[in-house]
Length: 399
Image: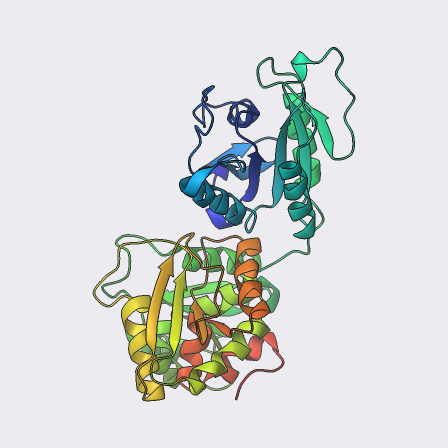
């Protein structure tokens, strides 16, 4: 896999923030070496966050985000500022761009405080430094640049790499559960919602992680799983299935074999597995009319039997015997105020970064709203949740 094939959810996210007309978009273009953002002397040229996935040495795979000025005005301007604030929920590095010929204003001070409060690594970049009589030397979190002349752009890239790439514990989808020579079966249904000619991202990532661990991977449909199990000389170490066929797969897999799903692996990889496990219990307390939010990290063409908008509501109604009021959101439109909901059900978040997924979970937890995950909830509805969590030894799992 080339660097350009790195999934968006695995890329480092660098957000450029600043007032209008401080040369932010020009700096983005100089930083990336591309005409990524439209540049104009007119205030407010950038009207919505601009995302660009690219390879940027020495950082490697990154996603650059150019944002509207946070001093935008009017009703539409307030909406743009709110979208800029939402970018902070996913940023691994914030680059606050200021005009080197002016002191920091109250809005910039406010955003610096917000960045520090969210514990986001940051750099304060004083642009237009070519207009100064003398350019100050770089400081720990500050550097003077000129997008116009290219002054210190290389140094900015180096400083960004140093600020963003911190020591992080190595994370795995499944490799840490396996040993060399273990057999793993992946159950991949090919129904109407399966993409033609390819596997979905969590399935691809799981295969790669199994191979990294030295495990032997077998892939089959749910309709052939029983036949494959019968043909194996010994049982597999682990079966990983699409959550939608948990009910049938759990009956075929021997109790001695670990069983989980791609979605549950994502819940552990991207967020707080214990929190989303505990959140599944809230489905048992739902009453008629209770509002339930079903959230997805990406936007996609929905099929007639879409899991989020069709299957999950149907399964929840059948399990509870009540008629909740379901609301749906996708992509970047995750609500900041969740107080009206009794439960949030989130997808695995394969297109989201770990930071954004944990922010969404924390948003729910801080407001006292239970949040769970597609796979965890489906396992709970089928009465097999404890079994699907055995590989992870999660405490507090609902029985």
